[in-house]
Image (cartoon, rainbow, N blue to C red; front, side, top):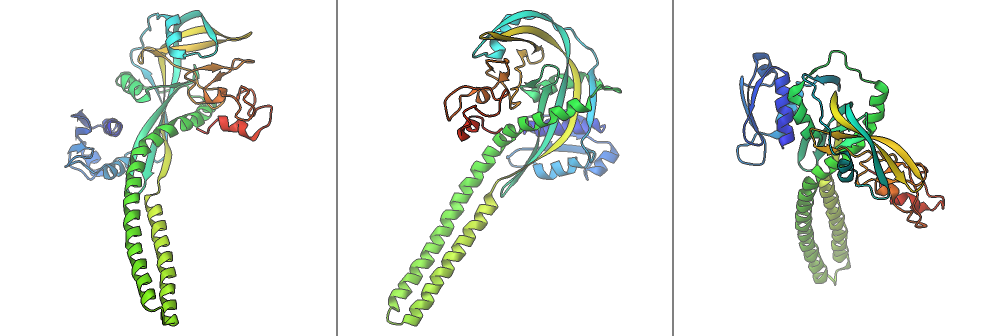
Length: 370
């Protein structure tokens, strides 16, 4: 819920409103006259989202606030008003804590001040069952270090008050096109997690309504069975009652199918705006060694997060934390992409080859879809 409030506050501020936050899930704003007209609201606006009594309808206000958004997603460049230097860090300790390297060793070569290109991808989601939930999730990628940044909302909030629009942002279309599929894959687990509570609630109501319908039709069928027993001497009457049994069972099946459709879960994800920001980091150059193979990598320590950003998996582009290295080319791998083949049990790198050399159908099963 906090994400929706933050999004609403930022949107209103961008349109000239004076906004002040209250307790979690609430905000108050003084709106310019034209903005109040667009929102069908008075110039004083007070919103409180949540499940408590007196809360505003989340879906209604997301629809209203959506009128303020451009029809197409935009790529916006920004920069820090006051760039800062990042002081030196314990590079070896940062690698020990941040990489969680499982099957190799690292050697620090150097660390220095650097600027990294951060892409904040916004995604709007709709989760529908017998009720609807809407919201916004942000995914942040560090394009310079090829990392999926943890706590994207926290990082966004930490820097946004010090940002100004960059009139000439250096945004590469090719880089943006390469990053978008990674961001989309990265947002799906988070939205699926958010859908979990709605799914559990829908399943409870489905079980309750299924039990009610089953009980109703069981009573009907018992009554028909009794009539058949009473009319056993009249074959025509008994036959008509048996036809009623068949019709009742078909009606019951149709009602249960309607319930399943009513409570089924549907998730829609739509891309929103993309914010591109250069931010200062501490760049750590390190040699990563796996058996006789090695590679030099540049890893970033983020001062706002106070942590090292783990690289993404070079097979599936998911978070490679803990980090595994392949034997031949020292690819960065997540646990799934470094797992042994389920058919022959041998380890293989899914960045080097999509399937195990044994060719078994089970090889791909060790790499679940993201």
